[in-house]
Amino acid sequence: MCENQNAADWRKRDRKANPGKYRARDKAQNLALYGLSLEQYQAMWSRQNGMCLTCGETLRSGIGGAAVDHDHLTGAVRGILCASCNRALGYARDSPAILRRLADYLEKCATNTAA
Image 1 (tube, rainbow, N blue to C red):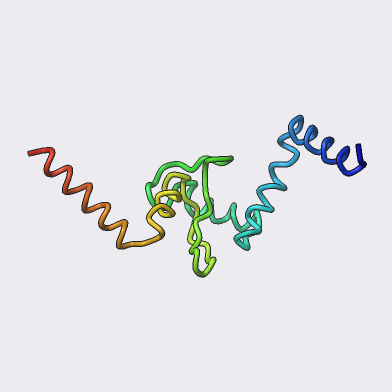
Image 2: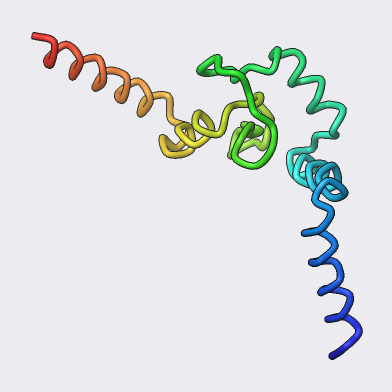
């Protein structure tokens, strides 16, 4: 087995045995994709009082929790959303028109089923 493979195997085992050791570094690397430092992210989280900007639910940290929302055209960070709201924006292709039509659809269906 080559030396590089031994090192890769060791890193994989170490990461599994010591997940906390890598969390902050992984978070920092992920935030760097959006041009954010960990300190900027934490300040944004505080300004939002740990709440999703769209649904108002309390944000959860970690995988599948909070997501950095950004404009896919400009790359500008808009805020921190819960994973569900961030996915909803993505599925609607960040289109306000699609989101309005979805809201209209839900309201229309609610009115029709209540009658």
